[in-house]
Length: 213
Length: 187
Image (cartoon, rainbow over all chains, first blue to last red):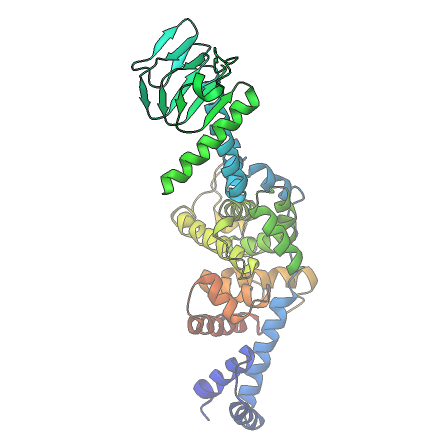
């Protein structure tokens, strides 16, 4: 065995711990007969021991403190952003509610002005909206902040917000159908805030689902 | 311990800055020592070690939990020391005059080396002699020898830290060992 090449490389393999069994036994036989290599291996092992015997150094006392002081302070918005990223469902819900309530309240604060959804052919007297006899309203009719009197026909749903349906001939023995004009759909009266909110929510969901259709 | 650190890192990732303090405390001695041995200067070593911890914190999200944190941290520290060594090369000549010392150069700052090392080298003296020999190895051997024998990393881990093939790690370890053997055989 060549001391400088083969034996040396086996020695290093041995020190790295990846020597095979055959290699190890051939190195052993070589070492038994070669003082030079024995010495070499011994010196290598001793070198490693010497390296490992060196004292470990201690970090200066305030090291950790200094590091902590130098860490970048998190910006507020980074904190919020991370929170949002970690709670996507809550964030979605929060955004949903914000939009919903701002929408609702701005709608509520539109004031107490009387508004009618489709005022064609209707008579407006003070705070009363009249559907005259012989007039047919095509489609839904929504009246805000006003009363409604129907003598004609409404071809759709009727919704009254902050108002009532005037039934002048209510005492008439002919009954409701004769005095109130015809409504070919649902009739809804909404005059309390909660009902009004509920109505908006229903509309919102109807809107959402009709988009899907 | 590894588990405790794992838990702390998780918290740091979630934004708990205070949890990082324990991580720094756990690794500070090792990282500082590594920097000191690489740079041979306490001031620079502290500087670079701090920088390594700060970088690790800032980039904590790019740390992959499935790997060992220490390997990742050492990698940052090693890259920083190598950068520093490269940068300082031109202005660190031993025969350059030291400022404010009236004609003294860096040679005068070094211990006299005319004595043979084999007699009466004991204790502290032996320690500093060995450290000096390690310090005089070329950086690419020095770093690997330290990672292997002072910091107890496996060859595979060293290859990860330095981002070089395992074969290269072995070659450098062999050469580093041989170089040190020549320097230390008389001790």
